[in-house]
Structures are given as C-alpha cells and as structure tokens.
Amino acid sequence: MLDLLVSTLIQGLIYALVSFGVYITYSILDFPDLSVDGSFPLGAAVTAVLLTRGCNPYLTLLAAICVGALAGLCTGVIHVKLHVRNLLAGIITMTALFSINLQIAGSNLTVERSVDTIFTAGPTMALFGGLSLTNRKLVVTFLIAVAVKLLLDTFFATKAGLLLRAVGDNAFLVTSLAKDKGNVTLAGLVISNALVALGGALVCHETRSFSATMGTGQVVFGLATVIIGVALFRRLSFVKGTTAVIVGSILYKLCIAVALDLGLPPNMMKLITAVLFLLVLVASGRKGEEIIHA
Amino acid sequence: MLEVREVSKTYNPGTVTEQCLFDKFSLSVEDGQFVSIVGSNGSGKTSLLNIICGSIPVESGDVLVGGESISRKKDFQRYITMGRVYQNPAMGTCPHLTMLENLSLADNKGKAFGFTRGINKKRIDYYRRELEGLGLGLEDKLSVKMGSLSGGQRQAVALLMATMTPLNFLILDEHTAALDPKTAEVIMQLTDKVIREKRLTAMMVTHNLRYAVEYGDRLMMMDRGHVVLDRVGAEKQSTSMDDLLTLFNKISIECGN
Image 1: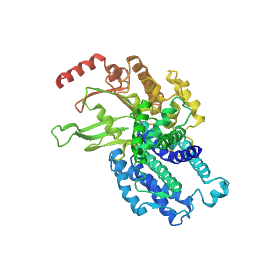
Image 2: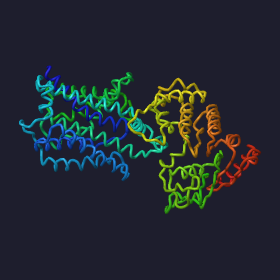
Image 3: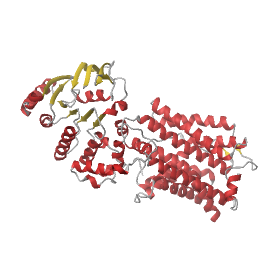
Image 4: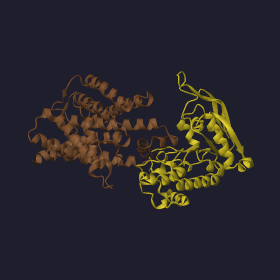
C-alpha cells in the first residue's frame, strides 16, 4: 500500500512538469497546444539516446529542455508567423514530431540497467545514497518539481511574466503596451514545451525506456490536472496556480493507480483517462470553456 | 502634428461587395488639439482611427506624426507614443490580473519587459494618487482583479493606463458608448480633465452629439468617407446641438437611414 502511494507520488511529481507546461499554454496563454503529445516523447527520445551513448545523465535534462523549446518554437512560428490557427499549429508539430521522435530513437528504446540515470548517478548517490532507490526517486522528483514551481512563480512575478499573463488575458492590451503579442505567445510556447520535454526526460530516467506512443494523451492528462488543481483551490486564492497543478497531477495519478489496483486492465487506461477527464470537467462546473488564470 | 495624407481604403476589393470608403482622404491635427468626430454608422470614423493606429491596411497614402511617416510601422510599434481607449471597457485592461498588476504593466510601457520584478512597490503611492484623482474610490482596490470591477470603473482605469506614459496621441474610440448615461458623463469629464492636464492631442469618435459639442476644441462630422463639417476654435464654440442635429439628419436622409 505504501509502495503504491510512493510510486504514485513519484509519477505525480514527474508528470507535474507536463501539467506546468499545459498550465502555461491552456490557462495562461489561452492556447490549446497539442504539440505536447509530441514534445513529451521528444524529451524522452533524446534522453534515451543520450543515456545509451554514455552522456552525463544530468546533461540529458538540459538537452531535453532545449529540444522541447525548439518544438515550442516550431508551433509558435507556425501560429504566429504563418498565421495558422492555434489548434492546427499544435497538430502539425505533434504529427511531425511523431516521425522525428522515431528518427531520433530509431525505434522503441530501453536503457540498460548498467547505465546511470539521475537517480543512480554519483552526485545523487553522494547526497541521497542512504535511501532506497524508490525513496531516492521520490526525493529527486520532489526537488525538481518544487524547483521548477518556484522558478515559474518567480518568473510570473517579473515584468516578462506579467506580460505573458497579459497576452492570454487581453492581447489588445499587449499591443497597446507597444509589444508584439505574437512574440510573447511564442515565448510562452517555448517555455511550455521545454517543461513538457523535461517531463518526458524524467519519465525516461524513471522507466529507463522510450516508446513512440508514450505521448498519446499527454495533452488530456495535462488539461485534466490543470482543471482538477484549479477547481480544487478555486476558493483559496493564496494557493498559486503552480501548486494547484502539482496537486492536480498527483491526484490524477492516484485515481489511475487506484483504478488499476482495482483490476481494470491497462488496455482500458485511455478510456479511464477520457472518462475521468469528462467527470472532472463536469464536476468542476467549467466544461473547459472558460480560461482559468490563477 | 498628425497628418493623414491622401489615404485610400477599399473594403472587400475585387468582390461584388467592394466598397470604396476613402478616396485620397487627407486630414491634419495640430499638436494639443482635442478633436471630436461624429458621423453615422459606416461614415468612416472608426476606420480612420484604425488607419492611424495601423490596425487595418490601406491601399495608398501616408500617415505622418511630427512630419515622419509611420505607415511602415506595425500597430504595436505605433502604440509606443499612442494611447487608445476602446468602446468595450474589457479591452483596455486584463480582467484576471489585479489592478496593481494592470497599472504596473501600463507604467512600464515603452521600456523593456525583462526579468526584474513586475510590480514596483515604490510606485504604489503614485498609483493611489492617480486613482484618487478619478474620484471613484478605486484607490483601495489595488489588489482586486480588474474583472470584478464595473464597466465604468474599468473604463476609468483603462483611461488612466492609456495616458500613464508620455503620448503623442490619445485615441478615444466611442469610449463612453457602452456605459450608462451617468457613468458615461463621469468618464467624459475625466477624459477632458486628463487631456487638459497632460496637454494631450486627442481624437475622439463619439455617437453622442452633445459630447462632441461640449468637449474638445475641434468638431468634425464625417459622412461616407468625407469630412462634411470641420469647425475649430471660436467657430466650434458657437456650434450648437441644433446645428449639428440638422446637418446630421440631412445626411441621414440622403443615406436613406
């Protein structure tokens, strides 16, 4: 039971990075970005290849962030510079990335046990070597999720962050402030997809694998966690949106874990995901129409 | 000085609904002038503002500010020295940001939006004083989200935000049209006060003939892309509501309205 809880927590904390990404696009930019389904496995693919080639495990995270940012840049350029509708821009990137991911990884990849990940590499062992592997994963993922959360909170309070929040809220105002709203949106997409790819990289470190289909449904997951989190803390305005989505992510993974534990076959996962998402939407009373800045 | 030089604008060119609005339209506005523009729907008032702001493209002609062409500048680049208040009070502010955040954004217009703190605490007293000047009791609501304020309050803040940094031009696009008569009056008085105090050059489009007569030092009436009445200074001051209404009715009858 405790094992299940810990592994669910780890899952929730890792996938919180996807939630952060979706929070930025959906909730702050009001941009339904489907490229997430492609940039998530992109992060994993790059990480898997780099790990197998003997790259420093910590550097793979940086590499994932960079390629994710590039994916976001693609969606941004397609939307902002080529004037393709936001939904379609995301679909185009997502579709292209499916092939690109396979090109990068060659096929589904498994990282050998002998290869060190961020959970087993020297510096991590020096700090948390006394803990079991599971507990070490919990500590490391917790630290990463909280660090990213704090970084985002700090960013949202800066002038650049304020402008990013303004562009999704009222793009006219950004134009009135003599700023190019397209570039602000672009920056948001870059940050979002960088975080999503980092999430993919962490999943790869945790499961030691990359599969071409691991991205399917990540957007839905992200949206569900954002909506759960924000709906849960709607009345508590002092809870930051970033905190809310971490909680949303953990709760969501908990629901899935419980469903599987009750004997639902894994093939039904996506169906459960869809039903859970629908339940959350209806229960939160928002139906996803309204943007949900927090 | 703002100059619109021989601007031509055709809507839906090359289709059956093609409609030429401006054919070599010219206009100049002196620095410090407060121009009120009236005219029926489709007379080209808002199109004129949109052309000046770069919101819509034109076929030919030039827009100059202080003798310098701004035609090649994109809309957001023109706003560096221009402010605009829209008809819809929701357009001038961010509803999900607090008033303090909104004011901080406006305060930083023309500067870089980098990684320094978004809210400058040293400026809060200044914002309070400015809000006090509006006389709407908004000075205690800095931490309130803009979306929870009334249309009139939002429009007042939008006006404050649009005029916070030094401007060449203030554009008022039927900015009282969506408000109830009493609030509209308050906003109109505030507008006049801000324009006088900051010595702004302003262009105001309005459907309220009384505002056009009472406020501003130049009055223009537009009809189908032409200026049919243009009175400045003493001549404008002697123009009465009745004069304006007579001309307005005459135009409307010609249009078949």
